[in-house]
Length: 174
Image (cartoon, rainbow, N blue to C red):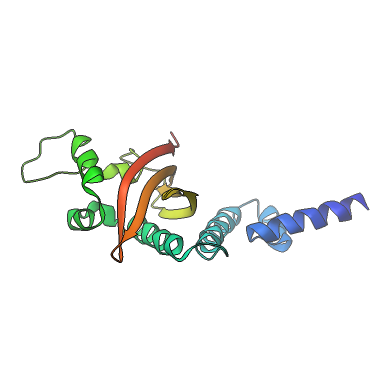
């Protein structure tokens, strides 16, 4: 009876996380080799769930899609993109944080959108989850070359264009 109850509770939790008992059993049977694939699928399910959550405002949904596209496609490395989507306040912060010689025009500390690591444990580079925090703040969890990170970005829509006003590094694995 106790095992049945635990299995029901575990199944409910795994259903919420997008994983099934049979997948977990298969992972255990193959020594955990499938666990990594299940983790990636669960992360993707969390991302999809975050974007399609009921109750999100239209603006939140647009900004979440924007952040996902910006990070997954490394658009933050494109100065034209930053000039179009950053407020003067954020562009000043990105210029001020740029510690190297700048030969042409403005140079931006684009690494503030990711972790500060030069090398990682894998090629994995993607958004895992984005949570609207209120007051135009969005926390995004991500992988940068396999290293987990978390940032907060302040963003809003102005005249149909998503604008970013601030970026904060919250967490990165060592």
